Image (cartoon, rainbow, N blue to C red; front, side, top):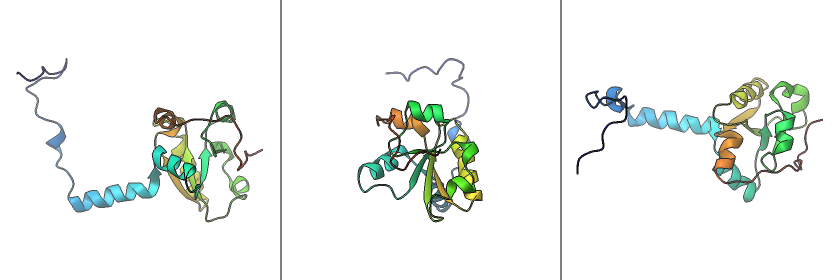
Amino acid sequence: MSPAPPSVGISALEPPRVPLVPPASPERALAHFSSLLEFETDCHEVHHDLATTGPAFVLVDVREPEAYVAGHIPGAVNLPLDRIDEESLGRWSPDTLFVVYGRGPHCRAADRAAVRLSRSGRSVKRMLGGIQGWRESGYELTTEPSSAGALD
């Protein structure tokens, strides 16, 4: 059996691309990937915490209010980027961990929200995949307001 032909536009004569840059040492890889876990979480971890012990964090939907009302992750509060300030954060203890999410993996609103929260001295993680990743994982959305309350 012969190997599959190369994809259109890719020459079989080109050298392999993955090994062009040597991989990091195991020590550097450990430091890098361990540090990512300090800044990011994923839909599965958030879902697990919401479904079991209850979250040890505030889940923040940073999308516009219209998008939040149309469907959001159960338990999430809506705090759009332009409303993240000392006044809106005053309802939570300074040691609260915030987990932020936006529309999806190509949405930078969650990153910008994480910057604002960090500048305010707050602990924050970004949920990878955003609401798109949540849906793709098969988890449900709700249109009910969070028991944690929406900001007025």
